[in-house]
Image 1: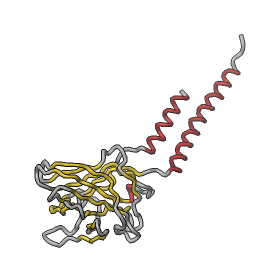
Image 2: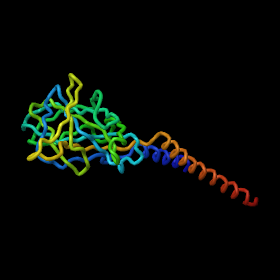
Image 3: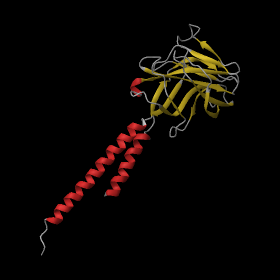
Image 4: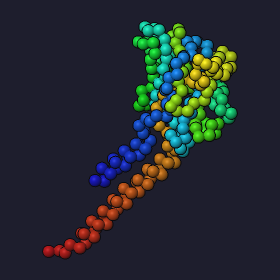
Length: 238
């Protein structure tokens, strides 16, 4: 029984640190147009606003998968790469992007989904900026493709997003703000992104949880020993 409780304790602690993936961000309501991502020189990037309700402790987030909607010519293949961009104190992208993952896809329809990551293991960890936009944790993701004519489709909702995006010139390191040109285009220049992941518990939280559970197991074990001792002492010899 003691060994069984130790096994259960270990499972509880592991489950606290390896939770199943949840929706971190969901901007998937398509609005029609697409922006070109077929360039070796320019990365298109957009904001990710994680609602504080999904990360109330404002801890780092372990990203397990990212899905984007892209358009292109049927039968055409290409390489797609996703980047993470730093955020400065003003809430705008700044600094050198970090390549997160690359995948290959062939268009079987004019519009299709491309997913980075398996959903089981961690692609990367990110510390969203929770001061730039009250009520949200902000970071930026960028997309580029080698497939000629490929486009990143626009979307708006159900999660909140900022009405602008950016392009990043790789050779110069310059950012350019992208806005909707107005009707007939949607008012928000925002792109299709769906992100799954989990919040990462602080080490101190895991330690307290683990030691508390261990104390409960040890206390139960000592309690059974005291009961066993009392029972042994109360048995009269023949």
